Image (cartoon, rainbow, N blue to C red; front, side, top):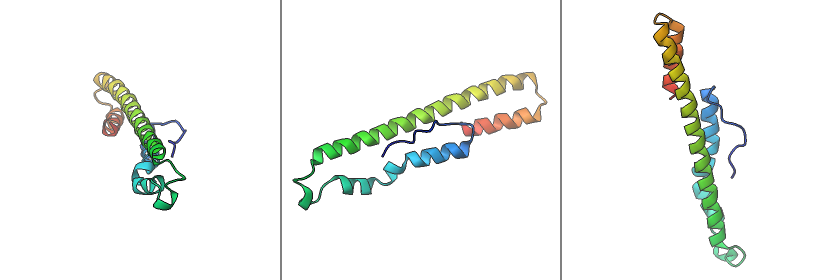
Length: 109
């Protein structure tokens, strides 16, 4: 179960959440994955359980690594936007739209 190939964008938070939901599929279906990975008695001779478990483990680790990378990247991007907005806010104290945008980005982080 590979991770989606599309680039993660932090601009649209709902889209980002959907991407994470899709990337969590392997975790959500772990019982099914284990049941299909570990052979039943009738298939023991045809399938190497050690190899299939290793492949499942690698798949899980890849999924976790990709999710962590995407989350950290989004936090970094959003934090940079917050920093910029805070600097702008220091210059324009009365700008309500700027304050609203700053709060929105802070909520994302």
